[in-house]
Length: 397
Image 1 (cartoon, one colour):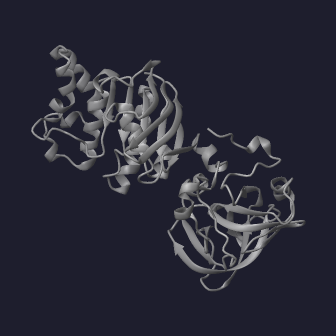
Image 2 (image 1 turned 90 degrees about the horizontal axis):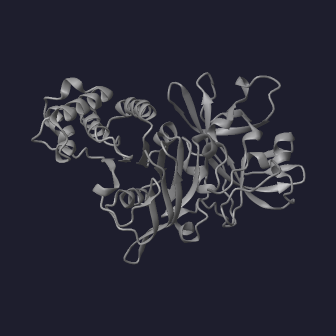
Image 3 (image 1 turned 30 degrees about the vertical axis):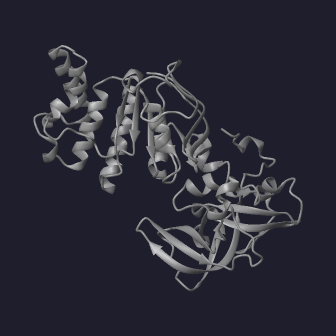
């Protein structure tokens, strides 16, 4: 096991900057998730850590040793790939034993290590079979077992579950969590799936356009996102964003005027009337007013539900509203170079309702808003606005 530290790491491919100013400390035994949209640089970070890509700038250390000039073999890490990378002509046992055999370990020790790893992964009965006869889930278990058998200082995983169907991904997420907690080996896991990131990681590092935006526990990222990008990326359905104006008696938004109750007073403390802000509202912070317990604090208002989607356990209701007409935009990234492509006016709004709701499409609906769950962002920078609730604010990673 080992601590992994990135210090000022950057990677350029010609004129293209794939990763910039990357600083991250991964604790010994930690399950760290790198998450972000496709092309954000997370796989490049993993490949630099593995030694498969040279570092343009900065320094990477594993267990206190700088590894910039070391080969992948010398770094004592094990990597699990998206496409399994199994040898088709070898049995499962020989695939798992391959690295141990090359290391000239005694046959009996190899057998014991392979059988132990196979037992951990639940594939003991597959050791004599070839990869072609296995299902996708079984192949991924073999690939992970091949990494475990080496007992490396760290595991690197590049979207290992993306080829599996939805049901099997859920099962394998639980298996990965169980095994990592048992082994307590430092693990760096890359994914573009924010649900996977939130359910697996001890901490999550959110990337976009080569930049590391925020590092924190899943709960920190969900409740206290540092900027618009993190707020919009973490959570499903995504957070709603509204251009709003601070008023003396509350907050004026395109869907309702929110009065100045105690939770909102805390969030608007120090903000002058007339200031424009971006209000972030998570779909789950709203509900059918008829289902809200009497006396619960919040704001009630009426709206028309444009589209209703029933999933069985929840109802997703879409509200239609008029976006600002003066050219104002909502920025989803504080990175100036990404503003043009990421700007949006958010002409829709999603509410997550309890399945017991009987609200109908096209009909007036009475909704409840949890005002203590509001998030405020600066429309110019995209950064979270600090409020009087200092204890709730997350410092930049």
